[in-house]
Every structure is written in C-alpha cells, then in structure tokens.
Image (cartoon, rainbow, N blue to C red; front, side):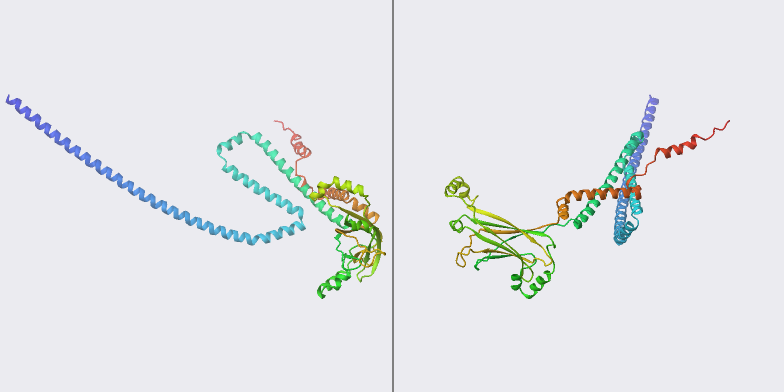
Length: 420
C-alpha cells in the first residue's frame, strides 16, 4: 500500500513536470509567433515605403523626360520651318530643270514612306494575325499584286488627267487669241424731254456732251481713253432700238413718228446717221374691245398691260479708222406739229449695238466650242505622245517582260551537265 502511494506521487510529479514543460514550450511558441508577425509587418511597411519612393522617382523621371522631349520637338519644328522654304525652292528649281529625275525621286521618297508606314503597321499587328498572314502567303501575294496594280492605275490616271487639264488650259488660251468676239452692248435710253426733240446718248468710249460736264481730272481720264478703239475697224454695225409705248389715245392719234440714230466721233462729229419711221400697230375698235374682254383678268391683276413694244434694226454702218465714240438717239417731231409737240409717250426704251465679224472670224466664232474641243484633244494627243517618247518611265510602270525572263532562264538551262 505504501508502495502504491509512492508510485502515485511519482506519477503526479511526472505529470506536473510534463505540464510545466508543455506550458513553457507553448508560451515560447506564442512569443516566437508574435515576433514573426511583428517582423513580417515591419517588412511590409518597409516595402510599401520603398515602392512609394520608387513610384515618385519614376514619375519625376517621366515628367523630366517629357519636358526634354517637348523642348527637342520645338527645336526640331523650328529647324524644319527654317529648312522648308529652302527645300521647296530647291524642289521647284529641280522640277523646272530636270522634271523626270525630280518626279522619280519624289516617287521613290513616297514609296519609302509607305513601306516604313507598312512596317509600323505590321509591328503593331498582333502575332496571331501576322502568323495567319504568313500561312496565307499565296493569297497575300495576290492581294499585294492587285493593290500594286490598282496603285499604278491610279497613278497613270492622275498623269493622264494632268495632261488633259493642261491641254484644255493651253487650248483655251489659244482660242482666246485666235477667236475674236463680236462687240455687243446693251444700254437703257433716257431721253431728255426738255428739248423739242428728245435726245438720249449711249457712250461707247465717251460722249462729247458728257465730257463738257465733268471736272478736269475726270475729263483727263475720259480724253485719255478716247484714243482706244472699242470696235475693230472694217466691221459692220447693227443697232436695235426698242421702245415700249402705251396704247393711249394720244399715241394712237399721233400716228407716225421718226427715230434717228447718229454715230458720233470723239469730237462730236457725226460719222453716220440712220433713221426709221415708227407707229403703233393698228387695231380696230371691235378687236380692241374683244381683246380687252378676253384679257380682263390679267389686266386687272397686273400681269398684262395695255402697251406695245416696237423694235427696229438699223444696218448699213461700217466702222472706219476713226473710232465711234458715242451713239445719239433722237425722237424727231413731225413737221405739221408745233415745236415740242408730236412726241410719243414712252414707258421704256433700250438700245443694243452689235458688230458683225468678217466671214472667217464669224465661222470661228460660231464654231468656237467645237474648235476648242478639237484643239484641246489634239494638244492632249501630242503631249501624250511626247511623254511616251521622252518620259516613258514616268507614265508606264517598269515591268519585267517575258523576253527578259526567258533570257535570264536560258543560260541556266543551257549549262552542260557534268558527268560524275
């Protein structure tokens, strides 16, 4: 029994020791864990601080590099703007002295730029698309040939359009100097009713009565322009006078009246004169009443008026060496009327002066559009032939003919086979 008690005490003391050892070990493990967590937290804080410092330094470096690039771009732009006028003047001079070589260099420069742009595009394309393009090599070659042919077609079309435009410009300049345009003037007539016979002047160069009424400076300019001849010599002139008269009782009772046109020189001397009698078209009383009844609605609304327009063409004057400076239109009074009477009432009056060209010049004038087209197309064919003979490489692209390819393959096929 005593032995059992001692064994129990030993086992209890052993348990107490084991428990104390386990407690101390667990406390040590907790302390170690706490120290590990503290060390990890310190490392994270240090890493975050380092990352913040690094990001701020990278931002400063980026901003500094951006400022340097901006300054460099400004200097480069300034140098380019300084060199641009010199380069343009050089290109223009070379285009004048050696156009073929200049155009060839411009074409090569453009091709280099396009190839460089194509390389940048290929670098930006994803690898999958690039691999797909490599797999579809035959289709890619076909598309490249088609695009190259389309580019050359557009280039040749631009060259031909340029030649056509230049031929039309040169043809227009030639027709401007070859074809002579007839003189045609239209002017309104303002009659002076303060005189017994109303008079209206139409200046071609200048009218003598107008020169007397202007100041010295304007008179000097007018007299200076008198030396120039507007109408070429030896051309026939035709004058068309139009008068719009109301169908009033006064005009119907007046009957005949006379209109005279005088061709005046610069000093007021009459070079030629032509006159023509006029009167309103006769209408009987029943006809006038019937027409008034039928046209009552347009007459009331104002679409029609009770008036007649008389037109008379006067021919027979040929321009001579002395230039015609002015036209004088006069309404002459009838002999049986007292002074100031026998003058018709007029709503409106106008005059058209036309010159008649000689036969050959008249044919050229009537056929000017057809001649312009034929001359322009002839110039275009000549320019195209000259370009094909002298500047063929500019218009037609360089292609490898079958003869040259066959010639290159012939020596390879004719090489002797060496015996083994």
